[in-house]
Length: 112
Image (cartoon, rainbow, N blue to C red; front, top):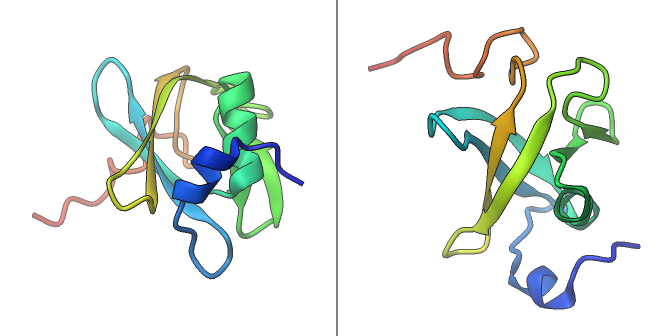
């Protein structure tokens, strides 16, 4: 059971899987690094440890960014959008943020 502050939990609008979208932004450059998913427990862990912690939909488990790669995210702040359905996680990123090894997941394909 999550220990997320009930006042915060009440404000979250989760999808059918109980998840909230988390947009991760570099604190210095303001670049969007990646998008991930959080449930109440992942958000609680992130707020408590200040390490980016997410729910892996493919592996069905929690993962702490950088735990195996060394590409750690030190969380500076977490913001909830006006609708309560998206989190902005502002981080100091060490190394690549993308699982492909790129600095950001948004380097590859520019559509416009």
